[in-house]
Length: 226
Ligand code: ADE
Picture 1: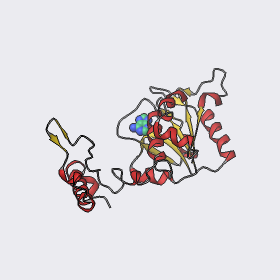
Picture 2: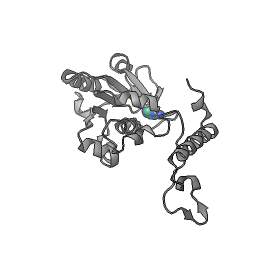
Picture 3: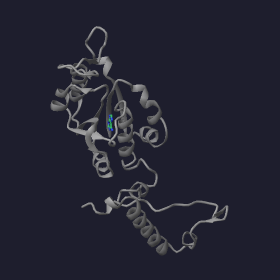
């Protein structure tokens, strides 16, 4: 999968993309991530990427020209399955959406900033707007990192144990059951004896019951989804 990210802060991705699973996925060539600095596409004398909003009001708006030129250039090279804009107004990211996007070949993610982007970009280029939650971030970079992380780990071959992504919380609309590791006793707190029993059938049953119990208690809305 190829992911092109348009941002005014490419450095913000150095941490998230150079460690752990995303790094491994890139090393295995299962995902290619390209960062494009929107400022490099600005045709204005001072390389501006934002301007005052028409009609007045506070804050600055990201200009159409640098973003449009960058997207046009990318689209000349290949067909994109989706051009995503990170925005608190978008549909909220969930596991189903991550599963869907992880099946694509090429996507663009545009990170918003300031008061927003010129509406004509949304009208004429953006095919999907994604929010990571009902709160406002300073910019779309953190949201883009989260989207990339959630989809990369689902690409076949990225995780060593492929079943491990399938058993994530939310994959079956259930929260994961509790997990434990050694030692079996610590400060008098014991690991549930069933997990030490070696009875695989009973363990799976126990894990399923715990997943249901947790979901009912913490996220009952997940059980009522169609
Ligand atoms: N940009 C600012 N806030 C955001 C959010 N909640 N989700 C995605 N992008 C954003």
